Length: 238
Image (tube, rainbow, N blue to C red; front, side, top):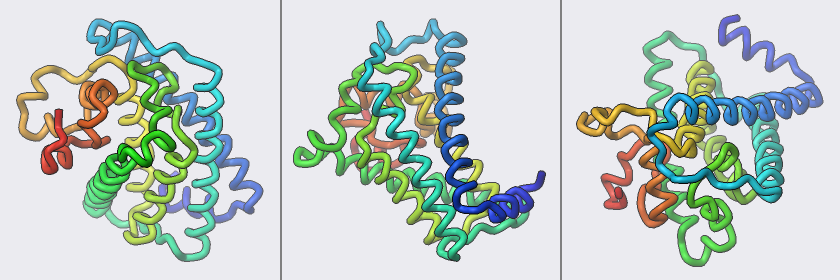
């Protein structure tokens, strides 16, 4: 199915159908992230970044479920904005799609860098972000152990960017896929990227598992998500 036909199918849903689809899709994404975490740990277990994985608690599971439910809510709000014409989805050629992926990724990376630094402000940190940093090491659901305000903040940022930029439908799907991949990678607790990448001026800017592990170990550094670009520019790179 082409992307344009896929979005035509999305447009044909009733609100109730889209709510059910969003819930099913986001819980599937949650399960896919857990399976990717398990695979990365098994495939690259000799490159551990932490001695022990963070124990999974009942509180972790509850927060992860709430985060998944709120992600579903964001998907519903995004669908309603799209249906109302506030979000524009295009279907251009491949070159424009590649540009859209890069622009969307960098815009979100900058927005997340800024909001992440704000979440570490001494007035906000205890209320919004401290719970996530109880995971000094990581486990299979660390990515989803977030304060509800963080989940809604990320979702709102994404929707604002999409309202500002008419993006390719393929680029939107690619970004959502990359977001789950980088989020899972950053909380995998092992480093699958080759050591040689750190010596490349381009590849070293990718937000690796070691990069985000550095943030969990030193919370005042490494605020970026997909790249190290903003940390390098603003002097917060560990």
